[in-house]
Length: 344
Image (cartoon, rainbow, N blue to C red; front, side, top):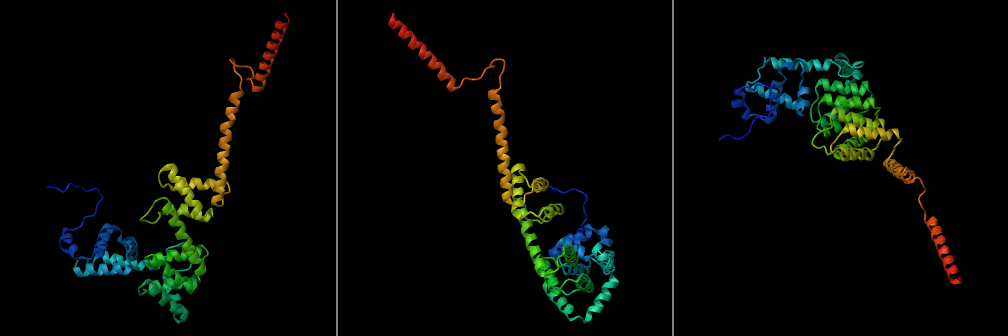
């Protein structure tokens, strides 16, 4: 008797060796299996792939990835002379020599990093910094990771206090990859963040703002996508709106469309920005003004319709005052006729 299910996935697919499933998979740690499957999936891209790439993709630490590779080598699934392994090692080495951002390209190279680190070897403050950040991140730095922090410290002139908070913030979010840490560091530098207090204020506000939007839209279990982050950056940074104003736009979006739509919310917020809205109270004033104008528009045509003549009615309607005059005239006539009748 069948189990009544079917495969909902279609090609393209990755071929997994039967021997791997029958012999190796059941005895291996699940995290190790994930690394091996990831390698199979990206076999054609290994020249451009590094240990950091795999760690970021699988939400592992680099140490986890290295342990998985060592395990599969020991099990005989990957050999010492494996082309996969050789390409990965080549990519990992090349990663350090190639600048990853324009901000770093002008100031950092493998040679510069080595020379800078050598020059800072006698700097007690920097040595203490390296020890502290390694404690936060829970790992021993490679030379490349040391060179990166040397660049933050000596190249970007970030203070030790700020860099310790950088390590604490990244580790708190489960990110220990040097590539992730570097992206955060460069983003702070470009935003003009120079102190621990400024960094803490930024991260707390950003976290609160983002979580309020995702909650208002009913989005849970994932981080915002790049396009969603771009919208929120515009609302909070470019427009300068607070989270109360933005979540109000999100609530109105859900009410109008029945779904979480960042473009629709963006139209609402762009309209408010154009009208000079600053806080939620300004939105209330706009709503009242719009309602008043709508009511006036509704009443205006009704008044014209009541007074407009047509071919069936081209005279003024009688008023209560006019009717009283008619009745008074009738009463006088009746009194006059009665008086004349009595005289006769």
